[in-house]
Length: 102
Image (cartoon, rainbow, N blue to C red):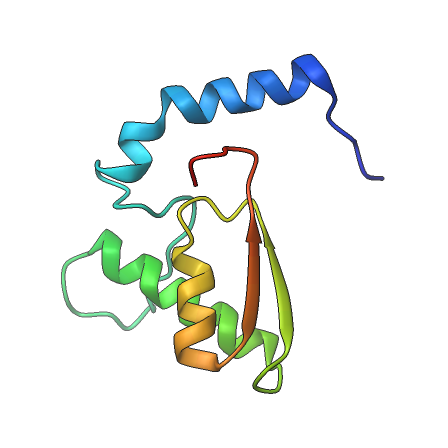
């Protein structure tokens, strides 16, 4: 089931991301959010930026799409996943976000 957000619901979502903007853009999340991947056999200390990059690469490999395929990144934020899918896998990515400044 898909829930469509209208008026006040969209405003609440935008309000959250607007308030959290600094953390996503400049803070510990370094313009990325949500997920990271560190292999079980990793012998180096945990590194958030590296784990997030690993997750993006794992996503691209898992998609297994031919170069030039079109991909929609809904909720792309500042676009780090879209950039990785474009530069590392040759995908044609369109990003959309509720926040007009992203």
